[in-house]
Image 1 (cartoon, rainbow, N blue to C red):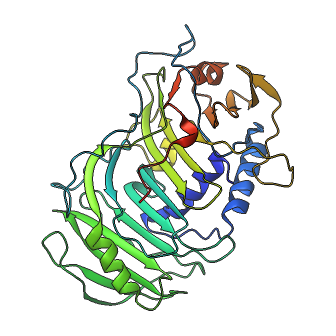
Image 2 (image 1 turned 60 degrees about the vertical axis):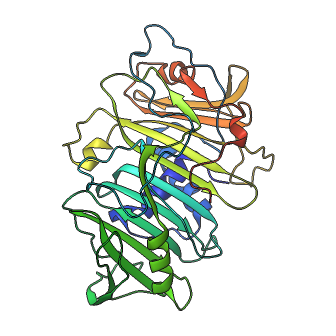
Amino acid sequence: MLDERQMADLMLAEVESAETPSRVLDVEGAMSTARRQRRVARGTGAVLLAAALTVGALTVPNMLTPDRSPATMSPGDAGKETASGLPAALTTVDPGRVYVRFGWLPDGIRDLQYQAGLLLAGPGVYLGATSSQNGDPWQGVSVTLYPAGVEPPAPQRDSGEPATAIGTSDGPELNGAASSFVAYSGAERPEAILRWRYAPDGWAQARVVGAGPDARGAAARVAESLRFGNDPVPMPATVAGVPANLRVITVEVFESLEEPASWYASTTWSPEPATAEPSWQRARTLTVSASRYRHVTDPADKAFVNPNTTFDGHPARFGGQDGDESLTVYDVNGATVTIDDRALLPSGGTRALFRAVTLVPEPADWHTHLRR
């Protein structure tokens, strides 16, 4: 079981350059390491499990600005989706929208993930399905939508060596036009990269790694069965009271298809404008994460919680330094919530914001829009 910020770190690693498979082979170990590094660097000590929360949408006066509409919408109908693409290339990626969903996937998929908004390399949309076991080299399926005018880059290799294009071949007709398979040097496992236009001036890419001898056939089938749309990302919680000077830059969701069931969802805000460099937009952020709670009593388990306080009757962990705050509240109706603030809220703002979060009914039973 992974903690929320660890999950976010892994997802960011997996979508680097909007198409790079994570070099992190042990998912849980990587999350644990990332979280420990953040705790040391920022002195917060905030640990987070996988779960979600159930609190009322209350607002604490003079602490937060409750004049902002909720950041996310509750689960609802998927909305009308087109079968082969979007009507126009994305000039602005709205983090709160679902632009693409999987249809067919190869056997053996272990988890699904979606991220929209600011990826490490810039705005984009990433949809992933992982089939590798913990500790093994990454393998699975990724689909990336690039904004208007942005061309897909070469994949990054585990070896660090630059990948160069070594050949192209025709792919199936997609979205009413031709597609191309592009082969790159340095592939450690069977790999297929398929590119086409999801809209005029908008590139899409499906990448399949380690799907047996017919990686190209799998990539074509994945691409042909994708479902495109523009409906709200279903989330387990809405957040009111976020200061009006902050804007949503990234929404992430993750769900494991294995037992014990786990899922994760987060929204990240930044005070920087969309025109700022990605690194500046991520320099100071506010993140609200929710995940499914799992009770663990073994300190050797990566999901073990070590609360240092209570909040509204729930075990919690609070830490902070130099204006930063991190609050994790465990087992709120079967869910866990973490608020990670990098000095964007007033002192005590994480506590106030926790009370301005509204969960869906029975969040422990919630599922992402990614489940097939």
